[in-house]
Amino acid sequence: MASAIKYSGATYGVIVTKKNQETPFLRTIGSQHNIHTLNNMPISDDICPAQLIRHVLHTGETVNKAHDHIGFANKFENEYFQTTDKKYSVVCLPLKSSLGLFGALYLEGSDGDFGHEDLFNERKCDLLQLFCTQAAVALGKERLLLQMELAKMAAEDATDEKASFLANMSHEIRTPFNSLLSFAIFLLDTKLDSTQREYVEAIQSSAMITLNIIDGILAFSKVRMDP
Image (cartoon, rainbow, N blue to C red):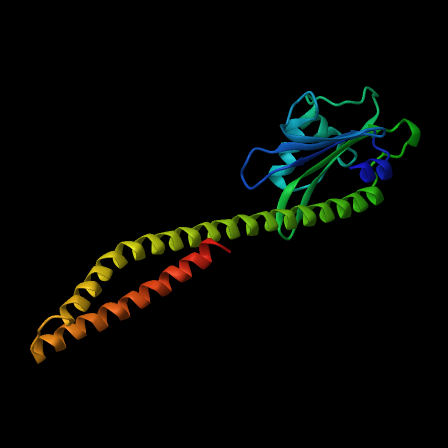
């Protein structure tokens, strides 16, 4: 914001950002002397021309008062502007890149020091658009990083839940198999014929194999839950 105001000669500026279809909010306001960062403040008519900014956010097109004075007056004559000079310039540019439309930059200022030349001439607007594109790229990267972080957190939560489920279920299954293995060992110490002993040994072997599998599941779930 400070660079845009300093380069353009504007006396007042606002940066508005938006997320998808959510309500846009004020992110920064500033003048030639002070820049203030705001915390998700809704657009207010007493701070900026809200109708003009919403128009740019909707169309994604730049509005420059110098390009069409009559059309600008017809559309936005009831808007509130900070400047009190009768001869003033206004421009509002979209913050957009290949990643999407992320907001708008609004600038206004007096033409008093520029004679018959409009404050926001073609050369300045081209460079301001470059500034807006770079800002949009930065906002796009910021949003992608946030989405990646949220996706990572969701995946980690899902993994932790699965690990917790496996641990709980493994404990529930392990208890009866421990009993089964104990009874099989006790039975092997009694008098059994060859067929009975074969059956009990099969039960013992199967119970031990199952318990080893459950131990592996418990070890896996412990690794996931205690990184």
